[in-house]
Image (cartoon, rainbow, N blue to C red; front, side):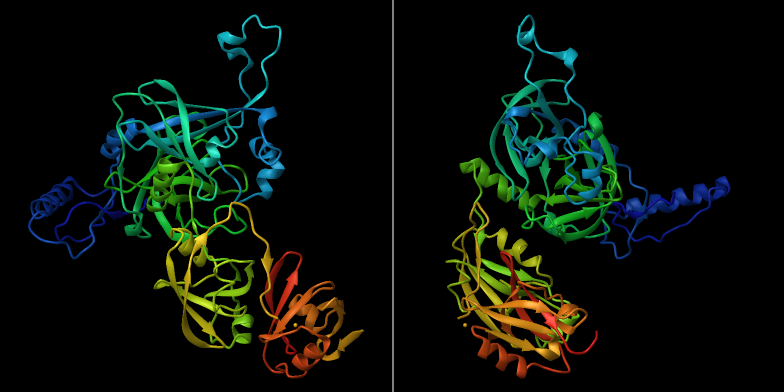
Length: 505
């Protein structure tokens, strides 16, 4: 295995020295002398050359071990909602098929029948079967507040916290937030050692990171690695679309969920939350919730037990090369608006389907996943300044955010609209109560190649509303023959753009 090197805390100027292990003792003495000079210069001048070496995390771990706790959450199986129960006892098939849904708070074992408490001794009724989640957490304050993941305590009726000194205490759930995967607990205890909170906005890829947790029940296990990337969105994970995850290669396993991620200064910069895995165990990719985001959620949970997020109300998609060309862009960028939520701030604004949001309050929106992460951290009532491309021209749209609904709202299309054969594109269209519906698609034709299918509703073509067969005929007659055309469709309850082209890609 090749060890990784990164900067230590030395601030003096130095050069990297690569010394083979078989060098003589004389070279070792010379190396010690060089390091002594660098140590002397630490307080005298700012380094302009990166100093590297193998870090020693023992002091960091010793200073923070007492702040990391083990969490056990218990829920009767009969009390678990149908949507939760399968997640608590995943089969191997489920683990293989749910890469980004592999929450690792589950310890994989049923409660030990031989360890029933005194209250069940002598009872004629057998104890009710229960499901046990095991995870980690860390102490936020001396008065007993503890932070962990929501999925660690999800569905539980009892939560217990085990401290580093062996004390095991019942915890009160002060609030939890599924969208942020954050839970705030409270215990009544003295002699608590809180962690130091860092600034996750200052984290840079390539920096060292250290995790402390309870993988597979092994309390206070320490692993280390580097920050791999920032602002990650997990594909297919609609619940956590508002979280700009930190990606690391720190080894995380079942039971580590909810534990702290430290920088080399011993400050918490994240909460270990998810892994990408095919086997259910660590596979080189782990994801942590940035502590700045987590503390915003925790503050709201502490004050009122619930979290309110800003709500824009747009349905969006990313652009690929063909769609960017259809929209008149020289490269894919931004979040392409495909529809709105009924009565939402966006629906009542000047935004239109086909507009592309490329910035929000000065923050660049490179991918569609950047938009919910940017909007979701803002409180309701915030005035958001959106930089929007409409037919290639940039302008600003100001929108005042509403409150994110607790349940997924219905998407709508805000544009206002016998059979029609569109021979060159391989389409048969029909008027279905004022909607232009695809009746049939020619196999291997341009429409089929673009992804159109029977029963799709066509809403617009190159931003021209398709509210009648006459409008559809006119739009398709003027469609571009040598470049992709942007067609907005509704399929089921969702809307998205497709790039429809006569030319093979």
